[in-house]
Every structure is written in structure tokens, then in C-alpha cells.
Image (cartoon, rainbow, N blue to C red):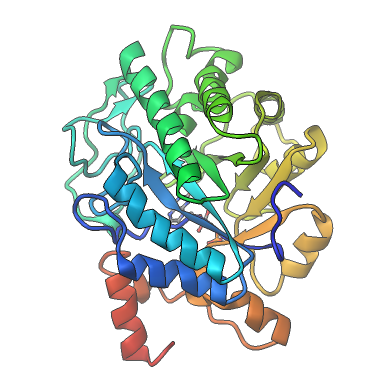
Length: 358
Ligand SMILES: Cc1cc2nc3c(=O)[nH]c(=O)nc-3n(C[C@H](O)[C@H](O)[C@H](O)COP(=O)(O)O)c2cc1C
């Protein structure tokens, strides 16, 4: 196992836009994360945390880790997770084209000047439409890479057990892999190898900047927050190549995400799932995510005996999912009212008080 966890129940990264206006985590966020650890999750992965003082922030009230004040506030949270007996991994995220609010710059950067499909996510704040991104320059890409590196070092300093680079769901690193977002003609665009190149450089730089025992992983998937149909045109070949490159670059784990773990997502009609590609093509750790619930948990746990199982919506609905699951208690489905009109912790706490749910 790539991390010494008490069990395989893992909280998937979930953006809650509940930091203060300067991206500093709050006491309430500490209550929120500690609750999962106390509820029996062996590993807590944080929401996507922004990494630099330019275009990485995607949402108003998103937490950051790009200065000492933000980092210090995270220190208290990670201590609470550890005190409850769980491990903590911080997800590092650069918004790329999916920037809905940013305290530092007015315009997103993306591999090419291409907007996301669909509409912005009102769950994270109302905005009239997607902004027009600029094609990232070499200097933009260096700044973003340095942001990932500096953030990983800070996460290590303040006591996190590891970081997860967010290369899924349509954010910057994912966009480099995507032929929708990445229409570059330079060394970072065009062929599959070139589309993977920037992601590889970021992984290598982060891996080299932290100590060997600090966990460095990456989250991958084809779907984005507004496009459940996107497929890499090379199909399974793209996934095989990508995970081999990531393993070679030194990741400790790959976290796969899809609408469901068992979906066969590839363009060429392959019978494999993304999780199966990682399990068969690499020896790195595996975290699986997508539609895991009380009905399928045991089957997935048996199918992927070395994987951690990451729960999103089921964890939100049941912060004590592991305890309840083991006891055979009933488990709730997520009531989206809890996250409306915005996915803040304040709204969740209000909803819980109204419903009389702990
Ligand atoms: C409110 C909410 C916020 C999310 N924020 C993030 C995020 O910050 N980073 C990320 O990688 N995925 C994020 N996701 C996706 C989840 O991690 C997960 O992939 C998705 O919910 C599917 O898993 P599930 O079926 O267990 O819910 C978010 C999901 C939800 C419901």
C-alpha cells in the first residue's frame, strides 16, 4: 500500500467554496473534515486547492495554499484529521479554462483559447458564462508548474501525508490531455505523447521537490464537470500510455474517476474500465471513484483488492459511511438541497439543522 491507512474507505475530493474571501480555510472546514475522519474514513482527500497567485483559483471562496496564511490555516485541519486516526492528502488544482472567479487575474489560461462546453457551475457561484481563456504561454506554464511545486512543499511542511495533482474533470492538467481544450502546435499539443508532456513535467517536478516518503499521486479521467461524453480519440491506447508515463515519472498512486467505476469509457470499444487499465498496466497504488455505494462496495473491494475506494456523494450524505456500513445501518442518498443554492458548508449546516440530521 502506498500509504499507511487504517482502512480503504476514502473521501473523494469535493469543492465546498467555504474558505474566506482570501482563500484561507476556516474553523468550520476543520469541523467538516474532522467529521469524516471520526466517521471512520481512513483517508481524507481535500477539495481542490489552488496553487498560485495567478490563474489557478477557479471559484470564489475556494481555499488556496499559495501563501503562509493559507498554509497555516490548513495545518490546524490536518492535525484534526490525524488526531482522529486518519490520513490526509491535499488535492492541488489549477482551474485552467474552468475559472469562474479569481482574486488575482481577470482571464483564465488554458492549453488553447477554447472554452469549456456547457454552463458554469452555479453550485460554486453564479456567473453569466464562461470567460474566454488565453492560450497559456511558456511563462504561464512555468508559473503554474512552480505553483504546483511550491504548494506540494507547503503541504508537506504543514503535515499532509501527500498531494494529489488534479488532472481530471476538465481543469488545467486534464485540458492538456484533451483534444477539445488542447489544440496547440508546439511540444505540448498534437500527438498523444505531446499532450501528456506538460502533465509529466509537473509530476516530475513535484516528485523531485518533496521527500521520498511524501505521497505524490494524480487524479485522471476523461469526463469533465460539464461534459460526461468526452473521450480521448486514441481510446484505451491513450489511457495505457498515460498511466505508464505517470508511473515512470514517479507517482505513488493514480486515482481514477468516472461516472461509475465499471463504465467502459474508451472510444475504441475496449472492454476495459479506466481502473482496470491502471491495475493491469502499472504497479502504482490505485484509488477508484465513481458511484461507489453500500450496494457495490464489497464487490469493488474484492475486484480491486489493493485499491482504496473513494466516495463522493455517499460521503457527503453519510460522513460516517464506514461506521454505518460496517454496522449494517441504513445509509442515506445525497439530498442535493443540502448543497443549494451554493455548495457551502454553511448551507449544509443549515440544511442539517432543518432536517434534524446530525
Ligand atoms: C459537491 C462536489 C464537489 C466536488 N469537487 C471536486 C473537487 O474539488 N475535485 C475533484 O477532483 N472532484 C470533485 N468532485 C467529484 C467527486 O470527487 C467525485 O468524483 C464524484 O462525485 C463522483 O463520485 P461519487 O459517485 O462517489 O459521488 C466533486 C463532487 C461533488 C458532488
